[in-house]
Length: 475
Image 1: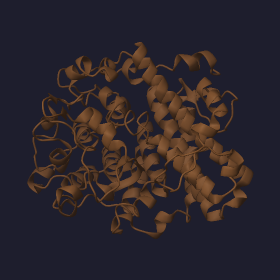
Image 2: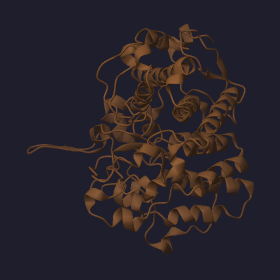
Image 3: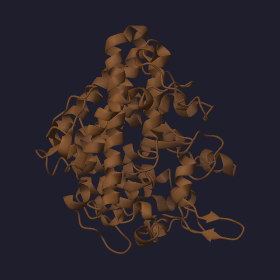
Image 4: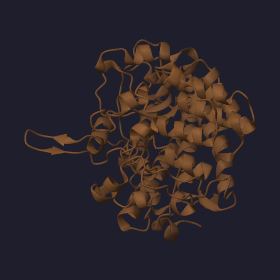
């Protein structure tokens, strides 16, 4: 465990144990005594809500781990503008990880990810110490959610700070931290981390089986989209475990198993591909920009408008006009094959400027969220896994996804499926999601850029371990 978490343990009351009034919409107010917090069922819920709030912060999935740092690395933005105009991400697009400002941002991601893991481990510690204050139903729910989040965070740390498992399975990777405290944790190999991730996922499924509230509802059928639906998808639910497992198995190259895991999410009936009529043929303030019916796991985040507006929209006053800090790559229309009937292009990209507005619009029907796992991704995983396994169903799986995005059905179907076709669909589907960089790494293929392609290599795909961890962490 790194030096930051040692400091974090000392500051536990202020960094973790914040009181909040709602399971989802956490508003930290005052730090409380740890034993007092975990003396009630609501205290455990408040602590779990704090985990989700920290994940949704701008330093993690609210910005940097999605449409910020990671999408800059994936060359989703205008390459020349990133290097010349926006200092916060200056040189990131050139993968100059040894620069002090970039090293600082990388260290921040590492520290905040492990700090959130420490929060999760502390909740699990108190479940063991004082879980009797919880009903068995709620104990299993909270424990299952903790295990999914711990697996999710460690897997993303692995994807950032170690070689791909297919390239360097025996390379030393990261610590997999399962206890709360200041005892150093040894770094394990890439393959060992993958197995620990899968163990946490499988144990989460055991805890949540027959206990998860999502089994009793079909989220997309719920009328109240603003709050009630989120009670099932704005937490790490049972199907989020299978969706994450599908992602991990695809990364490993275990295609049959990946297709099965993704297929279980698809076949669950809890999620549906976006209904273009119900989602887009509605008043502007009700448009479903984030495909809520497809969300498997998302983080409620009312600050996301501010995070996104800061970099995606130009600022205008009565006398001045300023362009977006991070305008999308200049070939964004070409990425969508120039199909204006593609609802992703039509609604995520501002036609007049080419800026991304996916997270910038006030939509009254839905609570603002950052989406982590989706049904759309499950279709892409299943299609690729089927293709690589030689299944004849692969093309139909891909085209089923495309028909839900492209209103002109004559343009929707692809005539063939191969890696290039899949990468093209991923670039369209993962805009602003922080996933495209990981896809290039997983496929060991060049990062696409309007000016030139960046050759695949560990020099760009593997972040350096922060200096503090190298110095103080147990190697």
